[in-house]
Image (tube, rainbow over all chains, first blue to last red; front, side, top):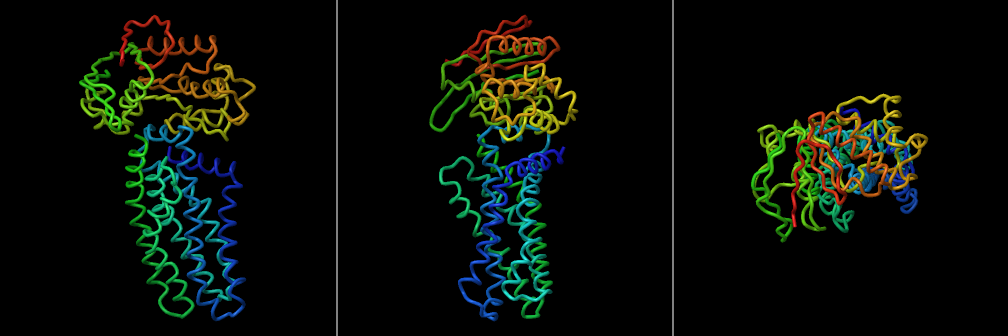
Length: 219
Length: 204
């Protein structure tokens, strides 16, 4: 039954693929603006690359959250999801998984291509992609809590950012830290393991918090 | 089988109702009446567990619905004001997905047959946003034909339907009651049913 939720959301993402692609495009554009705006000084670009790519990924992830629950809330399918014989925890996990597959994975896979503009080495590009592959699910999981809490509220988009961005900060620090460490040649593994730990933590707690938030929002 | 004791509901600052009591055994229907704003939808959502009562409790087969969790939903089908359909998906896709989520795998042929019964043949492959409101309502109601739940909670499901469709849905509810199911219905229409037990609840 879990697979039905994922299949459903993936089908919907395919039918609304313009929306999905626009988030990716946003990521592309924001990252590409920096080397254009700052000029071709390679050392400077290499310094800012981890932070820039990671912040852009963060913002793109946050934008994609609007697709998670809002549509389902409007047409009444969200309350039907609350009434399935599946634990709500699994429903949320399925939706977040579908969101990540459609928004997070392409972002992570595209990042090495973008990293070339910043003069990063092959090793660093690899670390960049891995850090994003590990970090984007955390962003999606934490973000889902904010998305559920702000359902149906006016100014929801802005509220989500206020709620969620502070919680994104640890992921940002470890994510860009991992790429930074690869550039300077120090311990990449430490940072990546910390992101991994955040991933495990958020897998356990976030869907539970999101479920509680959904029940409150749907009262 | 379904029992409500001393049910009270408060929404925001407003007290909607209090001391609502009823008991429904297999084959019974409860029709909920009341002017707009009297709490019909809230009562139905209380029964579904989407809302917490201010006072009282609800029991399904003797157990409090709060303690049943998701198991309660294996016996419950709820159709609310909004159709609960994805507009970008076709009736076929909508029906198969909602069946799958309920735990019943619905094949393509079976789904087409069900939709034809609801008067939607020829429309199953159109995205729902291209259907009329009445057709969308019928797509939503098609779920009742594919589910095996014993408790149906229906909130104003007959609006947007023409008289033949109203008759068809009424006969669906009738069949459900004859098989031992229970139905809670909020509707302005007068239901013409042969049910053993037809109770009325007036929230005015």
